[in-house]
Length: 419
Image 1 (cartoon, one colour):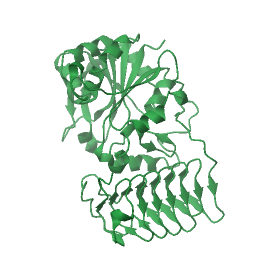
Image 2 (cartoon, one colour; image 1 turned 30 degrees about the vertical axis):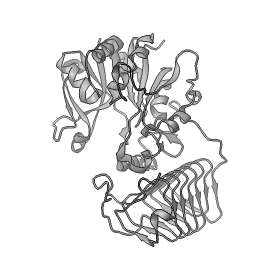
Image 3 (spheres, helix red, strand yellow; image 1 turned 180 degrees about the vertical axis):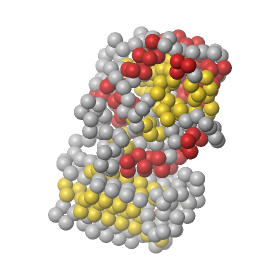
Image 4 (tube, helix red, strand yellow; image 1 turned 60 degrees about the vertical axis):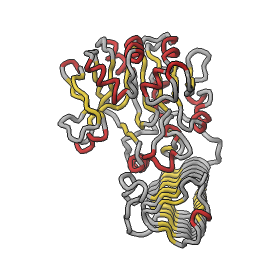
């Protein structure tokens, strides 16, 4: 029996993903055509022979709950172990809603103590990677560590995005900096932790720590617990920003992508929809795309990722874009460098992502400034409307949100708080 059970953090909101998390929790965001972000840690667990998994939810969990269900796609529909959704609650000794990752686990320590396994694997629900957790668990047990942290090398110019560790003899972590402005070290925490269960319970019961990265790890270092690093050499992406999400999807289009979704020895499981095969029309042109089941293409699609059920009409053009489930791109419409959520209709002759004006988005200038245009779930783009760059069209926007405009300038923010 595997000596660890897993707890996946899936509760937080993420404003940095803009319209994608207006209607769902971040781990439920679609990725790579047919998958969702939560599929990666769930699949890594079962491929690593970990069949006891808890998913801790809070923010807008319905889509995530529906996707996971009873865990059948991951072979987690089991009488013993399996997958359990631990819902948030108010009241009791901890008062109001959970405040962070460590606080979420603290509120479920009764569940933790009931598990037979000796070690607890803590995972984020919104990272993209393929990882066998068994070598890390083996190192953790052999070194008699209280806590083992998975780390990887990052670009020196990106250290400000991560928790950075310094490692001494025998892989022991001697220093930790949370998102430093400058750092000589480039070993970043991946947000993957293995605790001895008794240590996790002890630390959380005797502290008011809120987050693992910001509070638990530095607090345990100060208290001289044995904390070790496990270096992971493979692909890993934190897609917590719109730019990172777009880049991770686009990287799948490479001839030999760093993330191999076609490895029969490490399958990424998901809840597949029953759809017809992809249909390419006689006048269609497709070049360098990922096309999911149920897609129909009669127009031009280049360097794009299309989720199940997308329809691109004859005369329509889609370039360098991510189009989510059941979106319709009508005849003559052009979509360029855009992320379009589920169930959107782009009217005939409309242009989404138009022109060379790269004015940053007025509401999120630091996050949306590279020319990507976003359209939220079930929005309707009127025919012949022209939408510039770095525009955010919020979920459920329709003709009323656009008024009598014929053109939406770059950087605009449309339809917020419609529902």
